[in-house]
Image 1 (cartoon, helix red, strand yellow):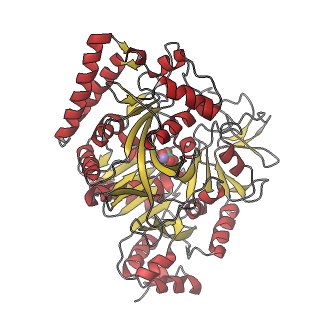
Image 2: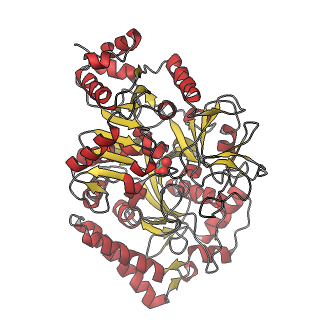
Image 3: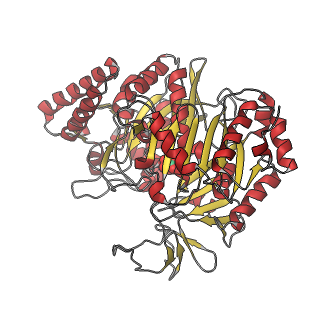
Amino acid sequence: MEIPNLLKGKLTDEMFLRLMELKNESVLDFLSWVVGHCDPESVYVLKGTREDQEYVKRRALETGEEIPLRVPGHTIHFDKPSDQARAREDTFILSEPIPFVNTKPRQEGLNEVMELLRGSMRGREMFVGFYALGPKSSPFQILAIQVTDSPYVIHSENILYRSAYDEFVKVGGNVEFLRFVHSKGTGDVKKRRIVIDFGGTVYSVNTTYAGNSVGLKKLALRLTLRRAVNEGWLSEHMAIVGLEGKETTHYVTAAFPSGSGKTSTSMMGKLVSDDLAFIRESQGIARAVNPEIGVFGIIQGINKRDDPIIWEVLHTPGEVIFSNVLMTESGEVYWVGSEEPVPRKGINYAGEWWPGKTNSEGVEIPPSHPNARFTAPLKSFRNADPRIDDPRGVEIEAMIFGVRDYTTVVPIAEAFSWAHGVVTMGASMESARTSAVVGKLDEMEFNPMALLDFISVSLGEYLRNYLEFGKKLRLQPRIYGANYFLKDMEGRYLNSKEDKRVWLRWITERLEGRADHLRTAVGLIPTYEDLRRLFKEVLNKEYMKQQYELQFSIRLKEYKNKYLRIRELYSRVKDTPREVLEILDEQIGRIDKDIQRYGDTFSPFNI
Ligand code: OXD
Ligand code: MN
């Protein structure tokens, strides 16, 4: 095997040997192409050793992409003011039109991004990282290569993903792998592009925000989701958490739109994953792994009382990259919602900051961006599950689909069956937009399985796969719909942040056959007696009948409108499975019957 001269010219002897050792023609072809097209000054090939990790961290500091903080191991990174979230409008899948997906004709998209990438790494060092999604050497493993001219991006990958240079060496030859090419480019955010090619490569340019630049996270999801649908497994936007029961740990998954309670849910038990899950059937059981080994979490609102575990990670020496929070002169960080005193001045993503500072439109700039983040290894969390690297995955007993819904969905309900849950809870999710994506805050969005931003096949195909996946299972996980954000008619939240502990305990007790239920038109809800007991046991709180009635009355009219909207959406998707429409019709029928009998709301005390 020979390394083409162009590539060879950018490599030291050591880096040359590292590439030779791979004995992989397609890796060399790919890297030669990137080097030829993007024209970096030099190339650093990571084996993932300790020295490599340290080198990347040093380069991140030397280039100014990260700044050291007072706590050892902590650094801060800033993205441009207009590059603070996932850029939906600039993200394209190269394909024929797919409903709800931003697509572009392949050649047009490729031409555009190639033009932006040409010479984009000039004068910079290019990093090549080898990673695995999922536990190494497991049936879940998917290999990937990230190429980037940003040490911050490769540093993030090193925290978030399993290094897998050794796996590449082991499999040698022509193993399949995903490819991610990222360049900071000129930094002109107006020319930001994220382009997903089903050939297995994702290109990202003129952006640094990790949701747009760290390939293995949400960019890979588009590719793995498509592969999962083709191969009959699930690649999902879900946390995985082990809930402590009386006899055993019950593993559950939790899908929530970004910024709507997923991370906090994953802290309520043994932490396997805070964001992503690969789920495969094995001997009739759904088993799940985390493709990642780190957390890229939203920091706003994290405080000592509500989030003690994350708080500890963010205040203990160890590897943490803060992004887009406020940095003070003494190297401390501050973020909105931390319940700490607001500093008098500091530096943030928009430069120097002081209380009351406004932008050019006269709008006040907050000290930290609402989508400011932290990046930290899972092993830094004291609730990290010892089974994170279990190659068999953990067995999933329940799946939660949660929304940020101020008006309709009850705090917690159990589906009648797998199909009922998949359709009326997962596929029917509508949620208020948060700062994790560019756009108007709080607008209600259709967001099935919290995945709409990442879907790369037709929704009909996606749901067909889900329903079929369930049919393969001997033990179907129970499905729960959750909503931590229900408000009363005056716009006040009906639950406090910690109430989710009670809902999760109810799920645990349901799995162990210890809690009862009431049957409503939309699903099974907890009884007042069980919740009164659980609020006392879990939170030492008195739970009043009146609270229960406000929280668990079924708002039939709102529910009916919701399902009519959803039905209409799916009826327009050509390949929606018949079963989906039937289940929605049954749901609407049940709600209608209750409306005739009870009027616009149904109190659980009616049962
Ligand atoms: C994330 C997101 O960063 O979904 O996880 O935005
Ligand atoms: Mn996410």
